[in-house]
Image 1 (tube, helix red, strand yellow):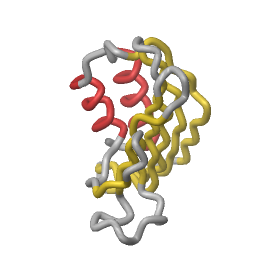
Image 2 (cartoon, rainbow, N blue to C red; image 1 turned 90 degrees about the horizontal axis):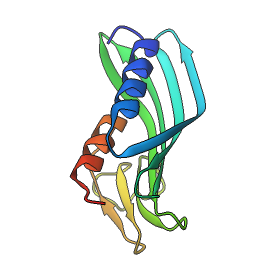
Image 3 (spheres, one colour; image 1 turned 180 degrees about the vertical axis):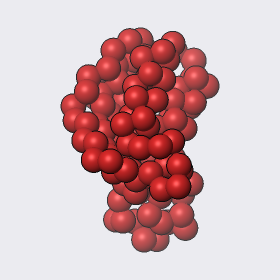
Image 4 (tube, rainbow, N blue to C red; image 1 turned 90 degrees about the vertical axis):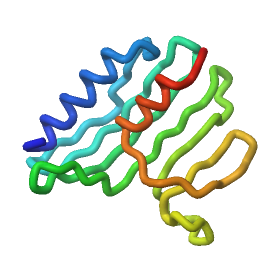
Length: 126
């Protein structure tokens, strides 16, 4: 990856081509050379919605995600999963990275990116 614009273009093309995504709403995109962020609402064919946020830098052609939140909710707005790296759960062994589940649990989880989440969508049967 050479710059933030290239990364965002890559993400958008993967989202648009994803077989389980019906529509994308671009809420926010900011690109400043090697720095960038995006916030998308992805509407799934199942009726679910995934709100995706990433802030990132490009260093030596590598993407480094510095802040993220991916909230997946069902058609009635109930949480299914939220992956994030907010520093509000220091008791979690993977702090600050963690997963909120729809039943109220907060679990350890390794860092994820939008590309990881798109792969998870592939594994779900609607």
